[in-house]
Image (cartoon, rainbow over all chains, first blue to last red):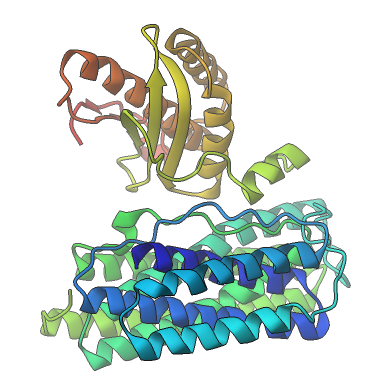
Length: 278
Length: 153
């Protein structure tokens, strides 16, 4: 089952990346499918926990550089068929039926999506409708690489913490932070695809999510959110003279970090008062 | 950072990233200032040791990952003697770069050196622990005189 979880992890990310590459109706369909696959991932993860199986978030590199959308859709379908076969090891009939049913539907839908040329890897580093200076473009490039990984990392860390606690107050906070990071990852990933520099976030170091000291993790997390706010502010300034729209987007992300910090502070207070996670 | 196409390719798809499934040595380069670190995994073959395969993982920024991608690509296939030359040449180049811009690449190079040193030690004692080296430069210039080395992590 650990192999199954790894494979679902990989196909979830690949489908999300395909969503960034696609346009129009296909984009939304692929985003919806990636959401479903992430849920499969968390359900299989819970199955492993219930079964007392050790697992981690290691996975292989996921090649996504294609010239045609149909190429990556074919690979997603191939991976889904493999997962369907691997479900034979799952003893939870309801879960198996559900994932199999989703896989069959997803594969049949992927087969009907229109093919498109892909520009997500053309290295143009240009955003439609925005004229950025070289300096602003460089700042945005580095920010997107750093922060897209960071958001993926946060999704995985909060997910790991969430599935390892029974405390509903903490579960609620972790779920909000997961949802928020998904929005950020979607936004940054889409910009990367638009700029022709799309890349899959790298694999996460185990010690980042297999947290030994959660209060220390939360304190460090609050500091990191403060740094992220500062990066957003700097970027907003850097692009502000060329694009008010882009600047206001980064101001919005900056303000969202305030709420994340507040939630993490509440989680920290709660955790310190009730030593009941992990 | 000068974003030419080669650099962007390394950022989009870092080479040799992740734990090497089959490895017989590893080493760590770390920044004691902020907890960032790089671990290099080696699969070494031959009586004259040669880096058959190499990978790395990092807790660090994109610059560290990019440096890891480039340096491990250069190191793959080299004998230890040539890899030592690569390490010396890279550290030499870094001498001319402002300290706060050096830390990321230095961390990768020291992790490679640590992995090679671990391998050599394990030839004598197979239980020898993973060697870890601390960087001399720092992202934070106020603490840029760190050079402590430890053989146990």
